[in-house]
Length: 489
Image 1 (cartoon, rainbow, N blue to C red):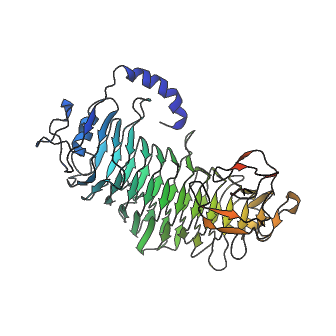
Image 2: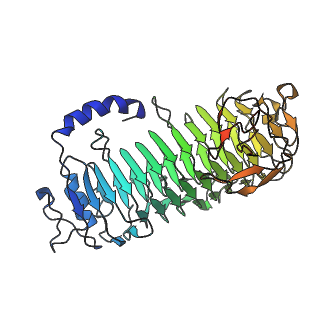
Image 3: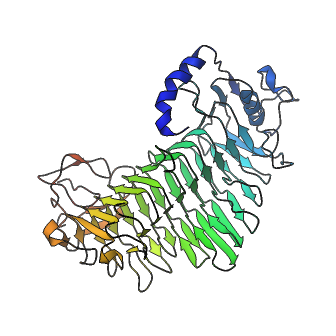
């Protein structure tokens, strides 16, 4: 179900289930991996009389209602190997099919670790009203997932096909392998339904490619539907790697890969108050989108977030190609690197008015020799990238062709290091050093570049009241500051 349909469905579904839905609480008392031989009796018990996580999920799957599973401290090791490709909770991955709330003791204290060759968790529990909102996963870590080869769909840590809400979850050190038999995306997460992540970290996951294939999405792969990454969530240090690539193989999307949310009304990806940092794409001549890769038809909204320290051959921070719409507002794109080509901060191929960047700081991004921090491909349309009230200050020339030839259009009140980004003095663009502090914690959940007291970006923008990246009110004085940081005097 798409976001546009949730509101209408909630009332009907909740009324229909309110009188009939039951809810049980299962307390897991064993770290072992064992099945429940009689899951239909509403009692979580293995043959040894213990309640394991696998047994609790299987029992919850047999009953309508928002059951709760309480997990103990410790590492729950999944040891039962899968015997085939069919999803079956009795072996391999854990499979959730009915609404359930799974509560751990915190991601450093409760760990679910896959030791067989399979993903950790697969979710097919739909949204069925306020009583039964699919999978709710809180205060746990998912690790050790390993998948690859023909018939695999991706998502070594978590594959979400329905509705999932994650809070204070860590998804780490999961690995996917793509080869000539199949392309398997999503080292940490693959989602094709609806997912919301709050205070959740996706880190140190790997997507490997070999031979005639693609290597995609080490961190989060949004295949379809919608996704929200919010409330101090982090996508960190995930890596897409190619081994012995053949021909023109492609590696894409180290941190977040947005494939096609936009195919139905309401489909979109929102990154807000969060960080995408330290992700890499390497090993292929075409290595694109170190931090974020957004593909054809995608709708992407980045608010009050930081994209920093990511690396790829092209589009170190963001690679945007054929997108439906991208909005970047009150955010920071900093310290990203393009190792082979252009667009250390942003590389794009877009149609008219597809990309809007406002009150954002783009600083310290380093392109390869002969290329530029902001760069557009040959297919980018004139006026496809709008820049408003932002700061652009990077080593060397700021924008390169064809961005400087019209793909990027100034909407005014920018502070830019040179005049290459379609600079417009009549719209009060200012060529100057913005006098930025280093990327640091200056308040709020994400890192920012503070404006020093001498910065020409201060009071540069006529504006309506609002907030900056940290949530600080704008303006602090008569007018707003350019960039993502509003200086408080």
